[in-house]
Amino acid sequence: MIECCPFLLGGDSILEPLSFPEFEAGGPSASSLLQHPSDELLVCLFCSESVPLMQKDALLRHMLLDHKLVIADVKLIVNLPGYMVYWKGRFLEQPVTDFCSVIKTNSTGPVETQENYFLLCDVLPEDRLLRERLQQKRLVRIINPTLFKKAALGQ
Ligand SMILES: [Zn+2]
Image (cartoon, rainbow, N blue to C red):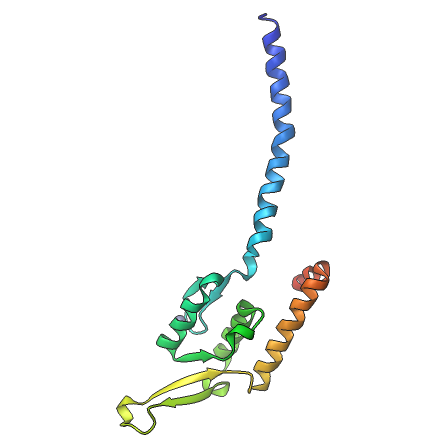
């Protein structure tokens, strides 16, 4: 009986490495498919505040209250993280007023109660182009995921 034990133990240790890599390979790839980690975070256009994509309303509220910026037709933007990254870059180059319509609230009231809000919408040709481009990218992603990956990697 004692002689059998080393043999059995040896058998077990051979089986373990065989099953382990399978489990490992299934784990990360399955979760990365669900998460799309690269598109997952929304970053504020004006500061470093960021939220998961699921909580985009919280970030939109933050931009409205803290920076007085409204993005028109947010629901129609197919890739909001991509959209935000684009405008964040542009706002670093040029003032917001170059791109946004200004909405004055309480414009008939006293000056101290008036507030300017900025509206980012597709009246601006650059914004419309961006929205269209993001839409086309998504189509490529649906029709041909391999092509999309190559495009994303710049190949
Ligand atoms: Zn902010």
